[in-house]
Image (cartoon, rainbow, N blue to C red):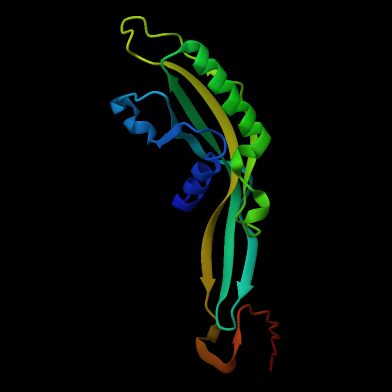
Length: 196
């Protein structure tokens, strides 16, 4: 799932795309939304759609004491922008302007700005869809929808402490604990069976 930071970065990326007010809203709250045109409603329509990998080791680091692994996969999210305006012709112009700017700026997601493994990548945009007018209430705004797609790293951090000791149990219930002062993070062992 998108982290709060990733969500904020996607939203910030839209700043150069439009001068309209952008209102982030949870999809479940949309039924309670009171339109305030002209504006743009920002929703994450779907997220966590795995594109590649599954808890793969993406990168790791060692700070001298602890080995830290970042495992995960690349996921895709669908971002939905609903543009509201009281005038149909202006709505069309604004919608296509936003659509072109999303393609031109890759939704403002500057891939070179962030560390490796923390990028959010623009993956395309569907053409705008225009909603039919709501004829029962002429005060209701005209609406259009633009959906675009981003890939992001969906990761889990695992801290691997050093191995301090190993407990062995040998055939007839003989137990042995081995400890050492050095720090090991993986253990490759070869056991030789010696018969008397």
